[in-house]
Image (cartoon, rainbow, N blue to C red; front, side):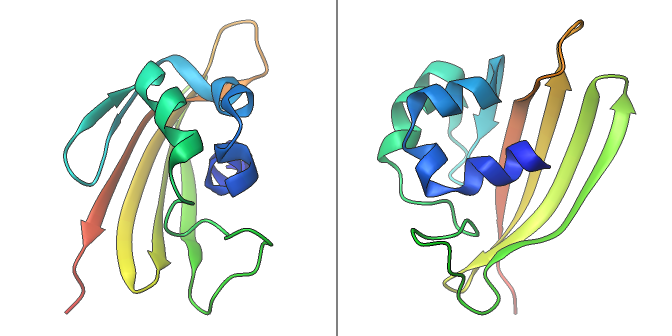
Length: 122
C-alpha cells in the first residue's frame, strides 16, 4: 500500500528514478482511455503528467472527498498482492486495481499491473 500511495504523490511522479524503483520490469497499465502502457512508456510519461486523480496535489492538502478510499489488499500468492481502491478528484470517480509483486530474494515490492476504470455516478 505504501508503494501505491507513493505513486500518487506529485514529487514521486516527477522523478524517473523513484518511479523506476516502484514499477516492475514487466509493468503494464490499461488506462481509463483503454490505451495500454508498458514500463518504458510510463517512465517517459509520468513525470509530465499531472497528479493522478485522487493523489494529493502539491502541498499535500486534499479537497473534501479527494484521495484514495477503501484501499484493500489481498495476498493472491506468496509475493503477489492485489490492491483495490477508489479515487474521487474534482468530481471524477474511478475504481483502481493494481497487482504488486516481490521478486524472489528481495524485500522490494513493485507494481506489476494497474488499471483505472472511470465510474459515472448517477
